[in-house]
Structures are given as structure tokens and as C-alpha cells.
Image 1 (tube, rainbow, N blue to C red):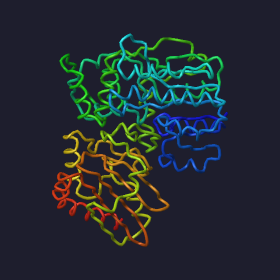
Image 2: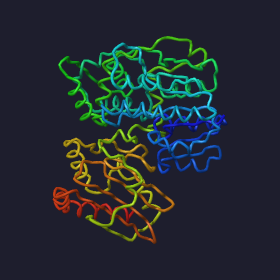
Image 3: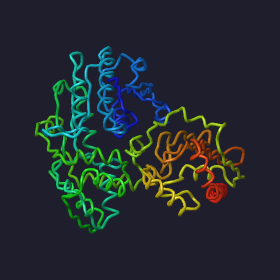
Image 4: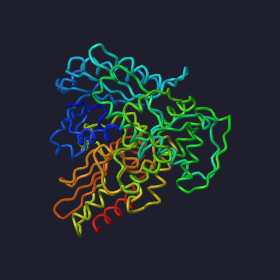
Amino acid sequence: MRILVTGATGYIGKRIIPLLLDQGHTVVCAVRGKLRTEKAYSDEENLHVVEADFLKPDTLQNIPKDIDTAYYLIHSMSNSVDKFHKLEEECALNFKKYIETTNVKQVIYLSGITNDTKLSKHLLSRKNVEDTLKSNVYALTVFKAGIIVGSGSASFEIIRDLVEKLPIMIAPKWLNTKTQPIGVRDVLAFLTKGLGKQELYNTSHDIFGPEIMTYKQMLLQFADIRKLKRHIFTVPVMTPKLSSYWLYFVTSTSYKLASSLVNSMGIEIIEEKSNINQFLEIKPMTYKQAVKFAFVKIEGNEIVSSWKDAFISSRNKKRVSTKYLKVPKFGCFKDIKERRVKDENRTLEKIWAIGGENGWYYGTTLWKIRGYLDKLVGGIGLRRGRTNKTDIKTGDALDFWRVLLADKEQKRLILFAEMKLPGEAWLEFQVAKGKVYQRATFRPRGLWGRLYWYSVLPFHGFIFNGMINKLANA
């Protein structure tokens, strides 16, 4: 088949594309910016990347008409609570209008469980998208999942942070809410095996793991797998806002995501039984099996996708785009350094491994303090780390930076700051002609921006000198 995948740079999108290619399909990836797609895609004969923004209907003309099936995997909680419901509906409506003009016979949509009579704004939006996507021109197949367990998923990483950081937890009462977690491998199995099945046209199915568990049980089982002794006490006095701040300060999640999750976690997500498992011949794994599989990927440094690389992981209201790729020259403060290198390839590898667990090579304590201060004022701090320890791609999150460009052929890396700043900041590395170049650029916003630059200048001199020396001597 010729298949359209929307949300191709997202958590599920990145994982389903290789599976579809392995099955012999031709895949068309719809993305807002080609820079964020995998470099390997350019070598795939049966994969085509088109730029399309479903909030801009005129860009959808780039999507070819000769498509058999489309996956609707567009989902975002990164906008304000008041706006994301409207924007998700607008995306779905624009998608529907255009897809109805193509040859598409089936649209497959991954949604959330919406069986409870009282739904959060997030789940209500998911249900509204489903209603919007229904059509008389093509058939809609809906798979509804609850908590998805897999390396890099938001729920997995939050549970991991809580379990590995806190021996004793004083937790909100919603930890006693029941849910039915499902492994990401099983979610992908449902999405791919439902492809082209006419029996599933215009149907909706809950997909779920074999166990009904509370969030508290999930935390304790996770701790058991990690061989950690943990004690959890729930209290009824923690408000949703306090719960959100609790998740925000303890885990790597952003406040926006924490708030959306808290609102959803108070609602039981128990799936309606059906014969979908038998029909598609899928036997979902247990929660413990899903966690163990996730750690195989983590320990092998093989995480395919992570929620941290999505824009929701930042509190920055501006969506970083290609317009920031051209580092400004005027009206900016700059710190430019260069050193002759011992080995260009070793220096480049060290640049490509910068940040996360590997650190910033010099002044580690100062980097940590800066991250803590950023988090204290509502920023993201250093908690996101990096998805892969040795490789980095355009669009990835890197501590409190966003990767604008990662081009190994040009030997160039450009980072854009997503920390709280009175201005905009870039950090660029390049290796050329036996030298490494390190350029820090700051475009201040008003008087506060200028005062900020001069206040951190002494620390920059110490940190940036040390960092480039380490890179040059790799």
C-alpha cells in the first residue's frame, strides 16, 4: 500500500514508519519541517517526506492524492489548556477535508480511552477529534489506548523519575486510580495489523494490557524490577495544582504536561472488552514485561523516540523553527572561541555526545546550578537530558537546548536555548580545517537582557574556555 503517516516525528510516528517499510509498503511522511526527519529517510527508496502543516490548509497540497491509507497521529498538549482543544479540532478538520479529496479508503486514528462519563479536557479533546474525523468518503478505524509503557514515553519516564529519585513518596490520592497500561510494542502491533482490514472499517476498539492496576501498583512493580525498596503514602489534601508542581519538580516533565496528566489521572481508564485481540491475533504483554523490554532498549542506547524531543517538553511559548536557524549577527552579544584540534573526528564525536549524562565537559557544578535556577523560575532545567548518548538529530531536546541543526557532513551543530531568558540564545560548534569553533550568541530583550549578559559574563569566560579546550584535546 501507499500510506500517509502524519505526526511522523512524534513518539508513535517514528516507531511505526520502519515497521511499515519492513512490510513492503510505500510511506509518505507529512512533517512541518523536513529538517526534523531522520537522515536515514533520504536513503529509503519507498519513503517520501513532504512538508505539510495541518493548521495551514494551503500546505496540504504537497500531500499526494494516490494514497490508500492514512495514519492520524497528530496530538499535542503543548499549547495552553484553553487553546489546544480548538487547535486539535482545527487540525483534524483540515486533515479530513483534504483527505476526502484523495484516494484514501481507510484512516487509522490512535486515541485515548474515553469510557468514563467524566473526562478531562485532554480526553474530551481526543474524543472530539474522533468525531471530527468521521467521514462518508473514507472509513475510520479508531484504536484507543490508556497508559503506554515504552522507552521514552512520557508516562514511563515520569514513573522512572519518581521511583529512582524518591525512596519515600508522599503522593496525591489519584495514585489509587485504576488503569490498564499497554506496552508500546502492542500498540504498534494493533496499528499495523489493523491496516486494510475491512472488518475494522468504521469501528472503534479499546486496546489494553492484561492487568487492571492502580498507579501506585505500577510504581511499586517498577521499583521491584529495578530492585529498589520504595514506600508510598497517599494524602487526600493535595490539589491538582500542587500535584502538577509535585510532578514538575521531581520528574523530567514540563508543567504543561504534568497539569494535563494530573487532570487525566483522576479518571479511571478501564477498557471495554471486545474480540479485537483474537481478531488481530495479539496477546498483549504484562506491565512488568513492557518495563523490562523498555530497559533493554535503554541499556542498549537504542531509544527510537522520546516525548522529551517533542516541543511539549519545553515551557517556551515560541515554537522553535527554521527561522532561528540563521544565527543573527547584529544587535547581539557574542562569545567566539577557536582552538586547533588534535583529531577532527574525535572532537566531532565529543561534540555529538555533549550534554545529558555525558555533561558539558567543564564547570559541571556551574551547569547544574544554572539548570536548577532555570527550573526554579519555571524553566525546564537540565532534566530532559538527551535521548541517545552518542548520537543527536535535528529537533532533539538537549538539556535546556533544542537542536536546530545537527549535520555531521558539515561538522556543525547549532543549539537554541529553551531556558528562561530575557532574550534569545544560540550555541554553535563547528569543526573545519583542523580547528574547532565555538560561538555563543545572545540577542537581549530590553535592559534586563543586557544586565543578564553582563552578570553571567565572568562565568561564561570560565565555562566556555574550559569546554572548548576539552573539545580541542579530545
